[in-house]
Image 1 (tube, rainbow, N blue to C red):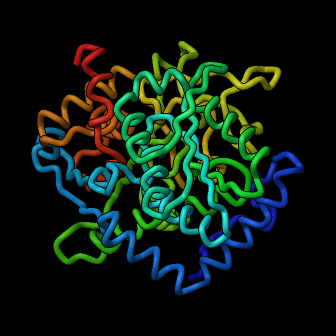
Image 2: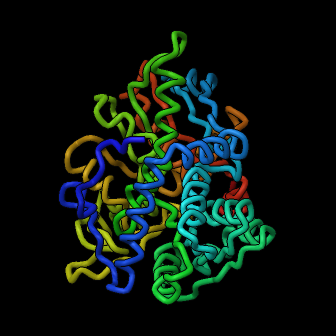
Length: 394
């Protein structure tokens, strides 16, 4: 299969991306790059991946018209139901692909980071399926607020390591996973959970996730009874679900809107809006937009959503931002909570807090969206968040 619009040989999307990593990891990154391109060109790899995506993950996921919300908001709102994929989120698209790649490379041990826990659960799932050892790093703060997902990972025989350093959130989990990989690179593959990190991770995660947008094209653009989207909306933390749905539409002229976490408000400084309020720098192996001070020190992010509580973003999103391929906005914790409650009560679908950020923007922008066909990538279900929502007065 041909890779469309890849980064250049240095892993750059315009000014962004690259491979900023310790020398000890360079052979592993080069090996991964070569192995991925070989696998992607191998029909046998795709046959195995496609069989698992169809019969294990449950793809294609449905696209569903939210009739009551559409009437309430005055728009034609459709949901790409990634919440119905096995494990409850889009993350499994990537972990199944990378786990198959690790087996192909002869790497029996898998490490991963997780924030909201969905990537950790999806990694543990893929490892249980394929007989791989699994270690998941998770910030102590996220271990507490995502206790259900921690139990799910351990039930599938994954070791969950609570990271107490720093703010004890996703950034710190990524840092610890990177340290582990440096020490164990010969027998370990690191399944990064988003389109972040040093090349080739942003590329290969995008390629495993773009099935979301490709399915949407078949389900809507090529359907005689469904309209072509005019606006596509997705939440953005690291950005894998957004890139997965945006990438097939990158040349379409459709309005692509990425929604970041405004936390307590951009002016408060307590947010996770790297593209809206950050600046270019280097984080976790790539050059991208991130939250940093005037001296270049990485600032702590904040979001009620563990999956958006990250001070950076995938480098291809930085490229999309600067070139105008997509636009990026941000909504607050309170607005996301309200949106979660509205969708739950109106459609009988409890969205993940991450996905609720996308709906919150749609609700706020309803006047400008009147009469338009809007697709929200419902990237995950909210079972994991109900205790958190109840705590905040849900």
